[in-house]
Image (cartoon, helix red, strand yellow):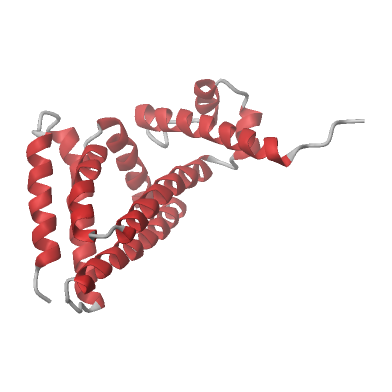
Length: 205
């Protein structure tokens, strides 16, 4: 008789396997691009059989969906923490350094740009990326609304949407800049971003 599966140990083990595959796929996508990466390459990088890969992920798009989900969870956690801060504006300015550092990491930037490039030509990946982006925009808008209302501002949805897009463009643009100009002054960028965020959040309605 086979031993019964214990869900208390099986779930962590499965997640560890998924994380192992995800890390291997990220490395392969950075080195070879999405189309240049095969499941066999991911299998070799992960140190497991292709059968194990397919046990956890149906295809490469499913792995991208998992990567995007991890990033989404991190960003939603961040914006929730900002909303819970006693001074949302100060918290956003303080955490700006994390956003700058994260987007200026060449390894992370290469992966994100590869996923966006694939989204531009692959409708399935586009759906994954856009669905996550909508959730990020909604959560960031809620964070900015919390801060702005506390400061006595009543903004329209159009105004909030513009602020969200401006902030997203600022931070995501760093991914391109770190590849084009790897020697940029990170400290100077952080200080400039803090001033820009302060001015953006302080503007009159």
